[in-house]
Amino acid sequence: MKTKILKILRNADGFVSGQAICESLGVSRTAVWKVINQLKEEGYEFDAVSNKGYRIVNYPDILTKSEIESQLDKNDIIKKIVFFDETDSTNNRAKKAAEEGEESGTLFITECQTGGRGRRGRNWVSPPGSGIWMTLLIRPDIRPDEASMLTIVAAMAVSSAITKVTKYDAKAILSDEKDISFADNKIEQCKIKWPNDIVLDKKKICGILTEMSAEPEHVNYVVTGIGINVNTTEFADEIKDMASSIFVQTGVRIKRSHVVAQFAHDFTEYFNRFIKTQDLSLLVDDYNKMLINAGKTVRIEERGDAYTAEAYGIDNEGRLIVKVDDTGEEKKIIAGEVSVRGLYGYV
Image 1 (cartoon, one colour):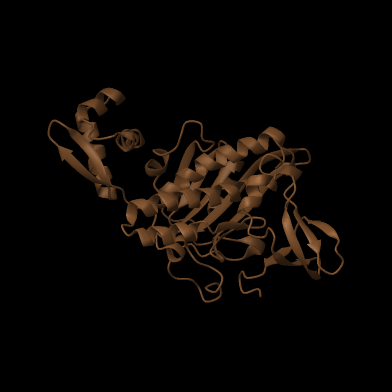
Image 2 (cartoon, rainbow, N blue to C red; image 1 turned 30 degrees about the vertical axis):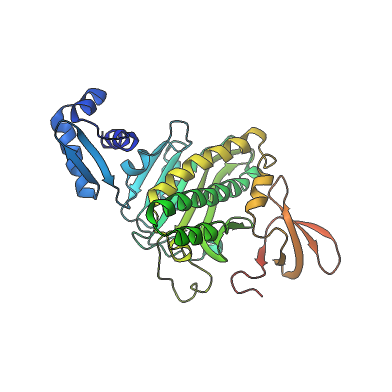
């Protein structure tokens, strides 16, 4: 009921009477009053006026089930939120739940991860209250060799969501036009480093890790873990030169739940395009516009070999198309470390 009441209040243009909420949900005034008090305890601020009702005037920066679900659309792929105050890893939670039959479209999210992992088993620092640590479980009807493309779908949705929300919140939060212009200019530099690092003004702010369970011709489930540094201000010594956050790069302290909800909308749009063709042909142009590698000199390390090349973009299967500097040969990179000049200390 909390989610339904929050959704009614969130979508209202002004005050909503307690009686109107009661009639809409078929509950008592006492039940509504109890939920309003629970929301106040969670940090929501209300105007409450006799004969007019309730209006939310300020939302807390929280990632609760009700806060996120109240912002989802009925057509979003994400249908269910599972929230933890703290957990070892949302990917671990999602995989365990998937093995136990959890439905497709469930998002696992936490305020704090104690065992988050990035690519190649690297530790992902996930302090409470500062970022978004979540994993989406889906059961797509695709072949196992197509599952890796879902990482690109997720990267596009994250990049798009961060750009939209930060631009919107900047106008709502900042009063000085120069500050808004600065934030807008910075957020325009929210790009993707192939295949799925999200980069903001040359600093990494998000990592994505996709895992799956599959049979030879069938995918049982895919879990996509996403860690976004939103309002983080402190970074471990080993990553502080390459990592940053949305707040540090733009000066805008956004509501994290807005990013999650926008991600749900954008992932749904991109996923539906992907599933229509079961490749990236309907996404290539949009992805390449987001790609920070495009038109840049890159250094590629694969199978012990290292060379420089010019990157063009991706093909319909998500492979990075490059032209090798020394030979002029065009290659399509499937996997490997690809460094972009000017990023993460590569000069």
